[in-house]
Length: 187
Image (cartoon, rainbow, N blue to C red; front, side, top):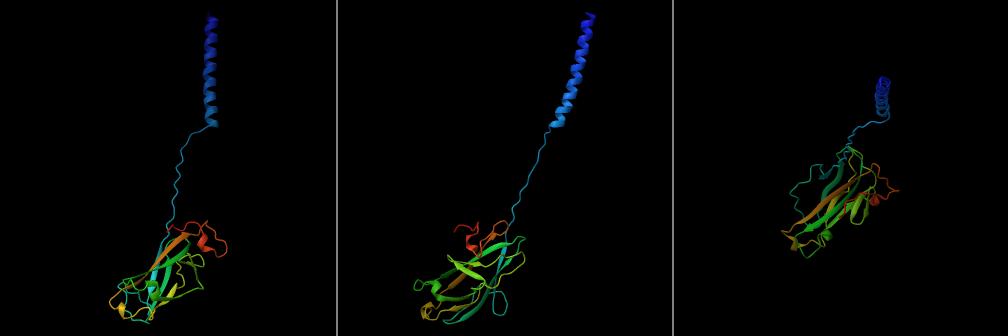
């Protein structure tokens, strides 16, 4: 019986030692951990500048015009964020007359060298880098005298500039096909 007890103790000690060794081995080959990944998307910001011929801010209340007047209004866009982007601009015409569509009352000198017209938008021909300002979209607005007559006295015409930007990082363009880049907002 004594031999049996000694064998039982030896076998138990061997089992304990093996289990300790096995735990160390298992711990060596496996581990458990937690990783927290934070992804932050960038924010695109732009500023529309509207200046007069004298370089002053265009008046928020607008200007009084007569048929045939040419009003200095230089429109540029500035990239005020830390990311380069593609840019497009839409001109929205408005007026308080039902007789003549407002877009027929304005004649603009669009800068066709730096801006490309497509589907009602003007696309900047390039990537606007952080801190850069575009060349002007246009610099003057002519009030078309043949369409704006005395019936417009006391009425309002408006020209609103809308601009949209899409990231250019990891968003390649083929040639000058800026209107087909990914990400333009749906209208």
